[in-house]
Length: 415
Image (cartoon, rainbow, N blue to C red; front, side, top):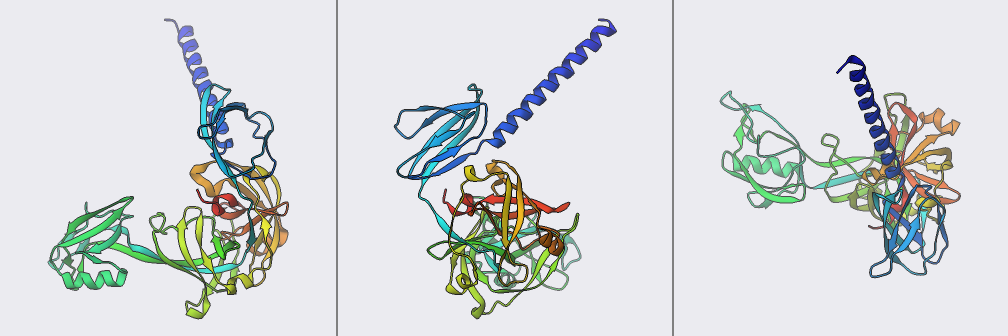
């Protein structure tokens, strides 16, 4: 084979690889533009235009399938709550995504935008790390090596429920160098493991782990519904060291006094600095669920009195548009105000439901005071065309004027 043939073959291979990469990129682009779930209101005419070169068959359980084309405007109308399935194929050939279509009752909620103090206690004690220490005999030891892992939850020790970090440490001293049987939860599994505590050089019994049993901070209340239920943050409370979603045993909302604002800058996100008094007189509500889409629970009349707005309709995904929006938040702990922003992109990606809305702050006053989005604004309501469409969730580390949001239907509506 001469050199020309070799070069020609290499060029063909490069061209083929380029075409394959382009095809994969286009496929992924179409996949991200296709929602996993579509919600429409019962009794209302809904329009959606995904502008996708795709089609599928729409069917309810036991019903005849109806062909649907996604390259044109779709008009939906249903009189009552129901659910449908749509298997989407790109160009009518390549399987793209399974879409769930749900008919729901119309919903109105009260957008909040007020800062709250948050305290949660874990269900069990969370292992945030394992390691070695020097034993009483001067030898390095690691009793938990290959026994416990970061992210494990300790539920029981020798059959006794673990109520917190302090109880765990005290009981460990009573057990001494006897066998320690730990009941742990790892992912969805619960099982027992065995280790033996060892005295360190100060005479304290240890098993070589770092643990945590609570978390606290400041966030923003997103909405209050007609039953006194609330949603906040737009993302779950994760452990700062393990990044795992914290298993909730109980949680509380408290009144918080905002002391100041640390302005965000490139590479260094800003934050709301708040003072939380954990006295019973400052309790505003109870947290009942900690999920990847937010924290949820029940609030009292004192918190409802801090919210300046009345009920508004929720906006569904298909009603959300790229363009101007309003962000509702409070920078001083007093009355929440509306600030200008815009949606620059929408990505339908269920793997990251709290990053489906891409935002940019455009309000000069908000940028002047905060630099844009700062920690503590997570949960700030996003309104468009008079409807609550979502909540702020994250800030871009390198550009505080930009960030992400979650659709309100993900927070408000049950799976």
